[in-house]
Amino acid sequence: MAEIILNTEKLSVGYGKRIILSGIDISAERGKILTLIGPNGAGKSTVLKTICRQLEPLGGAVYIGKNRLDELKVDTLAKSVSVLLTGRVKTEFMRCRDVVEMGRYPYTGKLGILSSDDRKKADEAMAIVGVAGLADCDFDSISDGQRQRVLLAGAICREPEILILDEPTTFLDIRYKLSLMTLLKRLVAEKNVAVIMSLHELELAQRVSDNILCIRENSPDRYGTPEEIFSGGYISRLYGVSESSFCEAYGSSELEKLEGKPEVFVIGGGGSGISVYRKLRRWGIPFTAGIIHENDIEYPVAAALAADVITERAFEPVSEANVRKAIEIMGSCRSVICAISHFGTMNDGCRRLLEEAKKLCILEKGET
Image 1: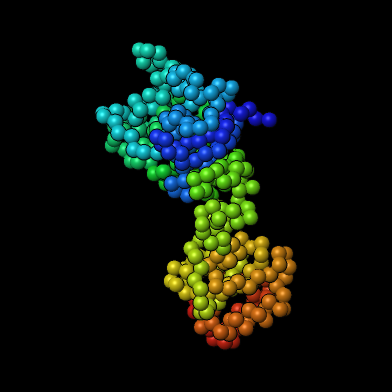
Image 2 (image 1 turned 135 degrees about the vertical axis):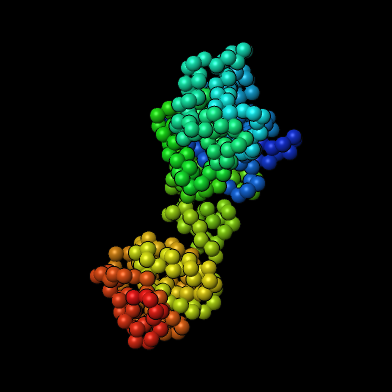
């Protein structure tokens, strides 16, 4: 069983005397990632600022190991916990190397003199996050995404037991978002670090987290594994969106579907229809999708965007009843788009739909 390095007991957080959240009971374990998710303004950042002692608790307690947070000496806390919070950091004539090396100051003593080992650890951290080439650049002259990675290097080079990150993917493009998540998984595995962070990207939270705390309407709402959180339509309720527009399997969302009589019938399956569904949604054209197996990769997208979806049970051949139903609906549409390029045993019924569309002369040109 993993060692609990940080935990809270009925923690209340807020500003001044105003409590924003209360009754927070969480545990951060070595070698694991705890992620906070929830709508904007729910209080995720306030929780993170409180557990790293930037804000005073308004009730309850925070423990690091067996010690209460408010009883730890500043230098002890600085060595144990490294923090990267949201916000632009302004510096005056500092190189990126200087910013990263600030992470080593808890180890330098009162004179703040860096040793060769301190500089080596800073260099290693910059290499890990891919900013070694920026070492001598002015921190204020680089891009927001590069600044984020430089600051992360500074947090890493402190070699903390706990790494607290508030929306660390802010300003990062997709390449560096994925790189960061991979890096965090490597840190928790190799360094046995406990990571506590907030994220807006639900698909990333689902993929990298060991545990997730959900905050809703200024209260801790659910706490559990990604499998427990991303199930039963909970995420849609958490964020107040239509259940059909969020796919729990992929952690992704789609636009709300268009209501109204379908104008187009899309013959899809195997992922072939996804781009067509999204294009029709962008154009504001209601459509029917079919015949889609319930375990098909594109079923969640079809269910979210199509005015109607004709489905078949998983692993079953397309039934005669569904073929007849599809042909009837297809006949009331002004056009048919066939996204499939291959028909096999299981979706042979869709081949019959294509043949019917040709007979009715409603198959869109250029589609086969």
